[in-house]
Amino acid sequence: MRLVLLGAPGAGKGTQAVNLSQKLKVPHISTGDIFRYNIRNGTPLGKMAKEYIDKGGLVPDEVTIGIVKDRLAQKDCSNGFILDGFPRTIPQAESLDSVLLDMGVNLDYAVDIFVPDTEIIRRLSGRRVCPACGMTYHIHFEPPEKDGACNGCGAALIQRDDDREATVLNRLETYHRQTEPLIGYYKAKGRLLVVDGQGKIDETTVKLLKVLGIK
Ligand code: ADP
Ligand code: ADP
Ligand code: ZN
Image 1 (cartoon, rainbow, N blue to C red):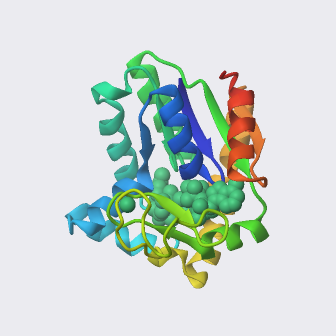
Image 2: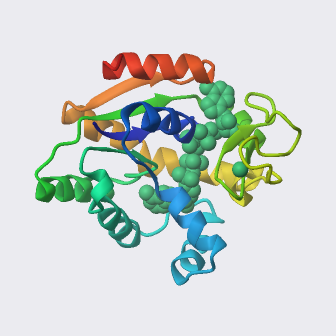
């Protein structure tokens, strides 16, 4: 299955993508994860991306599109993929369409995980991530077994720089202005599915599997 996950920052795209990727046996591709990997390793791409990410804006389309094109050309994407955090602009969505056309495949669905802004702020302010393996937690909604430590690898959990309050408000504004129009874009193409993401993590997983027709 070839999927795009839409939704505001903090809606639960990454959390759900991990579950779906295991279930569907297709790779989970997060442009945010790719940028953070490059930032951690001090690459030129990382240095450039950090400037935009820290302000709560978007990394320029031509950069982001190039990265996704390369990633989708890799062998493990031949049976499908879950794109998490891409596309985020109309030009990115148009580029994705043309990449898929060149590959001779179709996007199955773009799924919007809907969560209102007030809840988004609670989710992002409590998000903690493992800098070693990338696992995501929440101090109240998905706490680790041992306070402040990753269940999987034991590393000390951190708060993402861009999850601090001042940046969160900018990211929400960026989302509404640049990314939310994609809902209409995919609706017009007859590819849109909407899932209410306000319930618990497991409840949202059940809803997602249901709309996608996955047993
Ligand atoms: P979240 O999970 O909170 O939605 P991501 O990890 O997807 O955040 O992205 C973190 C940041 O990386 C974004 O705020 C943005 O600056 C940058 N980024 C990620 N994906 C894209 C994209 N498709 N286009 C432009 N910038 C992106
Ligand atoms: P996104 O990838 O859309 O930015 P994440 O999957 O990283 O979102 O989730 C944002 C934060 O909210 C994380 O701390 C995560 O543990 C938590 N979270 C995800 N889904 C839910 C949910 N259904 N209810 C409560 N908290 C959630
Ligand atoms: Zn870990």
